[in-house]
Amino acid sequence: MAEALRVGIAGLGTVGASVARVLRDKAAELTRQCGREVVVSAVSARDRKRDRGVDLGAAKWFDDPVAMAQTAEIDVFVELIGGDEGPSHASVKAALEAGRHVVTANKALLAKHGVALAETAEKKGVLLNYEAAVAGGIPVIKTMREAMAGNSVTRVFGILNGTCNYILTRMEAEGLSFDACLKDAQRLGYAEADPTFDIEGHDTAHKLSILTSLAFGTRIAANDIYMEGISNISQADIRAAGDLGYRIKLLGVAQRTESGIEQRVHPTMVPTASVIAQVHGVTNAVAIETDILGELLLSGPGAGGNATASAVVGDIADIAKSRPGFQHGPVFGLPAKELRPYKKAQMRSHAGGYFIRLTVHDRIGVFAAIAKRMADNDISLESIVQHAAGPDSALQKTVILVTHETTEAAVRKAVDGITKDDHLTDKPQVIRIERAE
Image 1 (cartoon, rainbow, N blue to C red):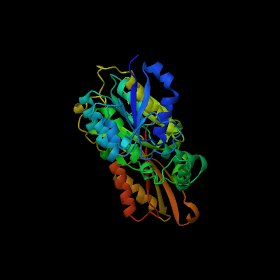
Image 2: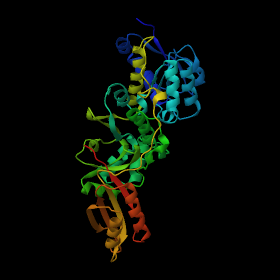
Image 3: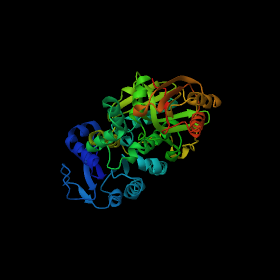
Image 4: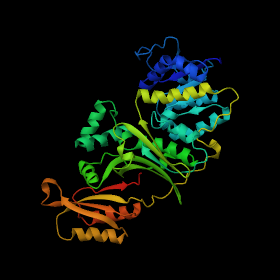
């Protein structure tokens, strides 16, 4: 039997402790599957005294994760510290430069430094595995990197943040406000004390940027993603979507267009009969559309200690199964030096059109003015509905428009014009309607 694979874990929070526990509890099974033992030989964290529910007494303790990354006492460096700079970046870079394999769950680090780190890994002939960085326990990275040879991806989209999906699910199912659902998500540990990173779309954007690179062979461009969060979604939007046969989800979408690659994160209306609309709670889902395979949908636990630990351990096991002299595949599907510069596409026409909700003064001429602004921007309307707008319905009305296929620029220009006409009593709401099977 080959020598044991020695693992060093940096970061012993919920995920790090879960990884150590799985490696301990599943030691015999992993040995059979990998053909060698997998042992935790070193760890690094800020607090040595904290009880993590797993015995780490046999592992050597390092106060400095960079020192652990460089030591000859490990074969694999597992980074679970978090953050795109500081100890996480320094230690991963040091590990790769020292010829150590790296496993990370850090999407922020990869979104910012992934290409440079991939170049180092490929130069040194070591693996940089990151299954847990996108969609938790769903094996989407392995699927896109290894199982889709010959396929050309045209679009990849999905629900990539469990916090947002949980909030939108509760809002629809129980008629609760966004604020009430967010507070409950924080109480249950699904949302951080400062939830901005999740609810404003940053977390989804980081994950999407990694999928985009894998899908289209481009350099990671997390800063070129159009992004909206869900904090402005109201019960009025949830109810209107349901009445029209849609459900609101926060989606990350990347697709190839004639002018480049389009990346966007925003609330989206999807048909209630579509598969992606049936993904509820903290569950994640990723859909991949290709020329050969058609559409593939992967769904499962997107976060949490066990789900993320499962993906991390899977990456460690892949390294354990490899042998000296084995030629490792590129980190992002193509050699890092061959990844093309990212060419940002203009926000194009959307096959499902747009949902527009306007709260307007109840007075003569408003309907006509709205219709004129739409016509002036060549926007064709599929439907237009007017109904009372709450307790002040004698003074204002809600107008809901659903457009046929049109452009982002046309919709924004029309809504800006309606706003300037001084017909609105509240901020307008615009939500894209996404094609989803």
